[in-house]
Image 1: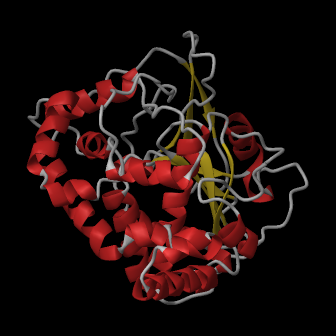
Image 2: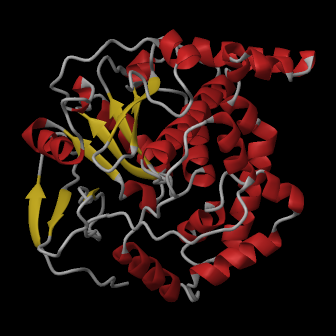
Length: 378
């Protein structure tokens, strides 16, 4: 399949640690939106690679008259007015989806697709929609395959209810707000307190947390596998979901965008830190299946040589759309990429940080910082 690409001059960035991949950095002379900073950096793992033009942000999201269940909760939880939801995609993204849909025999019409998805949902299922653009994200992720988009969004809505995503998100609220605590039944208070204790334990080492934003206002979520402190798979997943939801809320408040950046730092990593394959698969199921179109870019920073073995195993479980968003950052080329996308005076050292930042404090982050704020955010 041939996907039309914009004419551009290409700078090819290479590094010894790219694990046979290459960065395709597109540089175009087209006029950019004044607030746009991001250009794609695609790591390829096969002979047939697709280079993307810059990934900008179009602010013209379709308007909906009635807020969703999720946004009503946000309005109650945060007193500040949120910016309008902005669409985190470009014209080129749309052209690629249309080309893929056509090649697979599907028509691609986002408005019609979203309407069909909503019509296929029950009133109870609609209650668990994360926000009004959730059907659109699933339609885009399936490239016009409407039946698959409906199947997957129904699966995700069922998972959100059964896994208790809303409870995971608000499990610290009653500990910081006496009014919310008084509104809870003793059973619900006990349940939320247990969840808060689980997440607090999982977060003691700072293996996952949000700090700062990229140049377009997407939250940066830091993952440090070398700080793993738990072998409980379900609690690990609860901890992951808490931070995904929190990073999404931070992006939403900061810029109105819908995606997050993930920085994976491998300081202290050993193969003994590598999670069991069941945990890896569970993590990928959540990221790819239940949070489609939520990851803007993943930066794997300075992976050690022992990571090659781990990567060669797990990459076969990562779909091609996600692989396109993964960039390996090492050496001067990696620093160039991080400087391009982040203000590195405010990032952690694993992400090319040059400033002196406060050491992460888990108790402060979980118990004292608002859910839609990153750590140490002024």
